[in-house]
Amino acid sequence: MKFCVQLSAYHPDKAYGGQRVYTDMLEQARLADRLGFDSVSITEHHLINILMMPAPLVFATKLAAETHRLKILTSVVVLPLHDMRTYAGEVIVTDMLTDGRLMLGVGRGAFGFEMDRLDTPLEISREKFDESLDVLQALLTREEVSWHGKYYNFDPITVMPRPRTPGGPDMMMAVMNPDGIFHCTQRGFHIQTTPLAGNHDLLVEQVDAFNRGKAARDDDGAGLTLSLSRVAFLARDAADRQAKVLQAHDYYSRFDNVYTGPGIVDAGMIRSLPRTQSAEELAESLLIEEPAEMVDQLATYAELGIDRVILNMNFGADQAETLDNIHRFAEDVMPYFKPEA
Image (cartoon, rainbow, N blue to C red; front, top):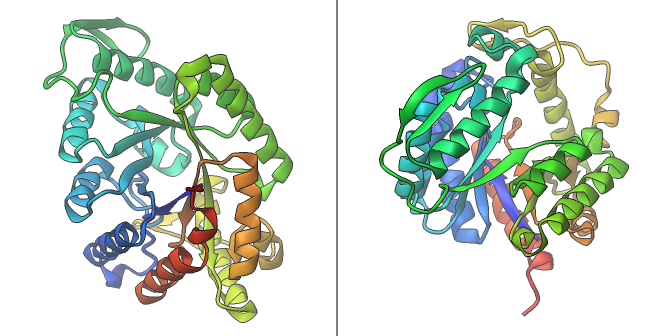
């Protein structure tokens, strides 16, 4: 099983400055590269201070310049917010400038606040995503593509330059529903998923759907991967674990506001709202553990057949502590999951 550091920009204090946030993320990526992590991931969100990354492909090229071997995952870019006729070219150039280390993770969008303000409300984002994905794949795969659909109507065009490899970079689909996982895997996509509230039964169903999708492709499915995204931190002791859970609870008081809540944002800063879920209840759905318990939990994922765990460590700890956490994770946890010689 491989491990990915999610470089999720969390910016609760405007005085800290956006440039410092991104400089911190680059430092985390350089450390992950040296310590043997498989990859780093970046998301796309606009107009808000959680997961604050309005230009993921631009940041991916910077990450490639600052590291040597890490895969760079977009986890995820929001296709309905872009025009595929120009976005296809941006993807191709990014794939070139990252020397083929880009894996393009895609999704429909999840935060109503930003989707509404960017004229793509969640009510239409699913169908717009489906058409956008089909258009993008066509433009990356073929020349002289024309389209006549609900959201795209254009005469024949050829995106230039052409992709460095047929069809462009590997693509990863963000999906939680087991039926959706099966169909996306069957179509040849890598999968990123997460169990709702740490629900193990749901995770088993998700893994089973992925495996059935791979099997349906016969030999063509052998290289497809399943990545599991979790909020995670390697606690030093019980007191440190409790402190990190409280940080996560504060983080989710903002996250839930734009994910499932009313979307109250003050000049870019998501307002912290009371949560009905206690910190103790939240702890059950997070991967915040001391080393032995962390290894045990991850061993369960490895036994299920998870290929990669995406670790979101950026939910409140300062930079020094986050770097130390990455280092300790590489030393105290990753050796248990190295492939057998």
